[in-house]
Length: 231
Image (cartoon, rainbow, N blue to C red; front, top):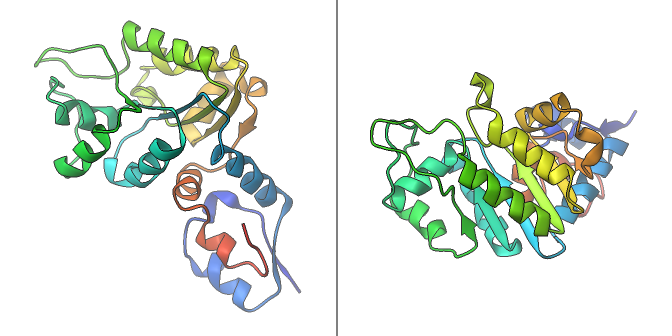
């Protein structure tokens, strides 16, 4: 008997079924896992100029990958509710928008990096940020047109509640660019698939959290557990 790990999207979890079974059997990477590793290794060595776009929420879960991206990419755009933490830390009005409970010092540490790009549209104190505005959509389209590598994980607005304009617009911008495009995250992939644009993207990861963890750490517990597998 042998153990073949072919579920990349669970490899970031140190569960018994992922890291303990390989201790009992000869264990190897399946074809999908090999494809994921090679595809994401390309994301770690982007062709310049490069653009990374990270949406979603929860600064604490995104901080490690943002720190890595700011080292390797020329521009790193932060969207979705995640951007609200940065906007608030920079002294901008976020109104009634969702803001995570994040250490302001840690947010400001990343905010000081000149590669970080934030939304440029503004709101009043009684407003709520639910999507990117026209100025930010145009900014992203311009960045996508210039980039040779684009990495994208996470919707740019409150996608599940119908605020899809920025996510859809950026999907079209990337699809129409000549970049090597790498995407991941269930909502992001679903949005692109709904538009019929998936064939226009270079690499589609099956992982969301697994993708972000791999990018931040260069490996995952489920990969490390396999016999003779070195990245």
